[in-house]
Image 1 (cartoon, rainbow, N blue to C red):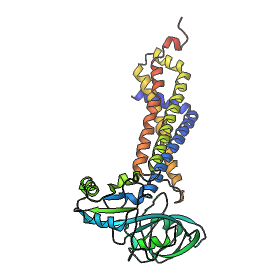
Image 2: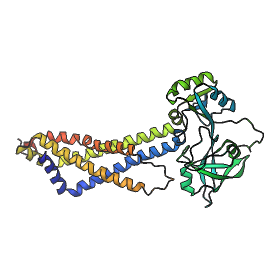
Image 3: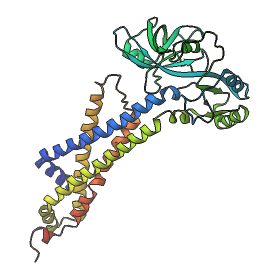
Image 4: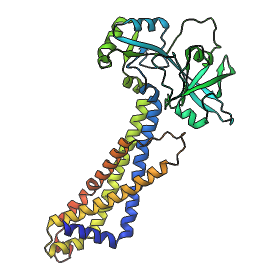
Length: 385
């Protein structure tokens, strides 16, 4: 193994400018692959974050709406029926809409407004401040993303703008708590009580005489979360006109989630394929340029295993250098991103991407190794008749 490594290193050092340049090309491919993976995680997280972190085990939709949260409409009677099913620990109604938050610096921020029942499933834990006091309170819990973008603190008064009866309406809410990231539909969220939700939601002006509370979904906690499959079937059998699913199924059916993730996965696949072809092409050209040297090594008795290991060692070293440079630069660059950019570098995604990039080097260079092994010494040296 010592001789192949020495041959590889000497050639790389003698042509260090060329190999460094190619390592930088691999670094750029690494940057592209990592950014696409991070974008997929960031956009996916922005769509699923609230539902994924729900303090419940099942999500109930109205039937025949293809698990569309916007199309699902469930009244208070359905909530009562769900609660009566044996095995249900608790349940709460949840609503979704969008409004414009007007911070003090005159900038506008589109936010998702999530209406929940205080103390029921669906209300996130306040990591700072307190929970919502009652269904009639004008309090709001901000998710971490809103707090980062606006610098609102506990006790501050916020203003939301909504369109009701074709006119702009402004409503004042008080920040009572701040929770972790709870984005919905790639928007930062504010969580309010159901009465406050009905007050600020776009559409018709709120009706003070409305008593029946309509929600998009019902979040269900179970006595035994491990039995969620059986309980989903039980709920659908005992409560008419509903569909009960787990949280993963619920967020995978949010608008655009599956199409978005499949598109980004396809882009990532083609980025890796391009990397494979670029690395393969580079080392194939390298092998063609040094056919006489390979022929000389074979003529003086170098075995094929030495030639193959030297070529493979060179491929691995260049790939490792390029991937290391690309990964380090990408992670350093990510530190400068503002919170508005939906890019998240998760350890698992980074590790998977780096391993795949390290593998495509030897795979891409396999053709050049195979070609080197087929070089005939006399032909390479121009001595064949």
